[in-house]
Image: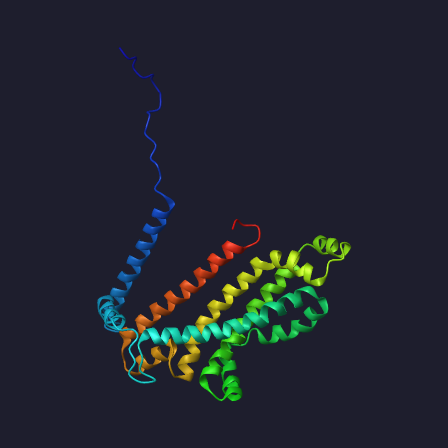
Length: 274
């Protein structure tokens, strides 16, 4: 016969295995979305905003034919998003071609750093939209002016973060390079670039976020085709459901761009597994 448990002994309880981390995160996100929709429904009950159901119904109608064309300024939301992304790609790409090499040079050479410091400190805090009249004056057209604004606002994060990354390279590395008589190109490719890459990608990620924010406002002012103009046009037509849909679309596109760059940063950052 089994002996009875000793007096005072702690009862044996089965340990519960915690849920997987991804499941806990997914549950938290679902709760957050549910709370957001509930708050939205509560606010819309006062009659100022359309309800979630009405907005969803309008979204189904919009995305049933996102690429229609009824003239140069009456196009589906798909064409407007692609047009805005094209402007962002051109302005952002030009800023990367200029800003990243400039950041390397500013971080590498003290004289250039001291020379550029007051200019960057003066121009970096300027609102991107303040550059729009200059773009319209120079280019005489709305489309290149909007691309120019994207170029300017994307420039500063890439210059500053790349320069900071170059300055963080240990001086011992550069001293060894001098002892070995390495050329400036060898120093760049073998020492600076791998060490600076995480900082550079951070600047790129910040720039693409700013660029996507700015293009919406710039298109509201310049008109034509683009998601910003589409929002303003829907406001003029008093279609508030469409404005809310555009807000969610702008957020999703911005989130997608940022997550793509986060993936690239994790993939290629120095010292992490490829």
